[in-house]
Amino acid sequence: AVDPNFVTEAYNQGVIKNHPTAMNFEHSNMQKNKDLTPFGVVWNEISGLFTFLGPVAETECHIYDRMEVFKYNYFYLIVYFIGLNFTHLDNPPFNQITLEWDIMKNWPWYLWVTFFGIVSFIFLNIGYLCTLYIKSGVIAGYLELLVAIPVFFVVVTYLYRNTRKLHVHHYVIGYCVVMLVGYQSMYTSAFGAIFTGIMVEGASRWGFDPIWIPIF
Image (cartoon, rainbow, N blue to C red; front, side, top):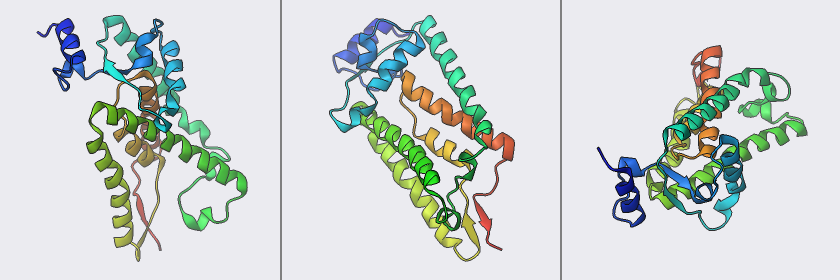
């Protein structure tokens, strides 16, 4: 067994960086906050959401005690259930959102506002995650994912261009987003939990429908 106090001290001194016990990074403003209730901690995370526009926030090691783990998992589960209720958004204007250009080019203005709002929310959070990965020294692997995912869709769509067209289901969006959420904090876990719920809801309600569907 590893003494948690030894690991924490060694990490703070820069002796170790990748020890499993020291990989539970937390945003520094969370450490300053004495209120470890889920919603109190999340408020501090939200306040730091725009840090990627400026200096990257400090990160430090935090080892959770049993009660913190319980609160963490309980909070994750609540947000996950919110994502599972994506079904209830199957009403206008959300059920009119699609990534098929033949339909998109005829959208009214309010659908474009809704679409860019959703896209901005996703990319804002991915930008925030990237700053945390930079500070944690693991950005390279996630940059590879950020490049590989769109390249994969572009290449396959091009190869199928004469017979099939791309149709991105929301289970696919959830799956791609969840792959990029690897930082452990209350806010980022909530972000990942929502899209995990969306992914599961899409797959359980509609099934894993093909992403490239026949044109004819």
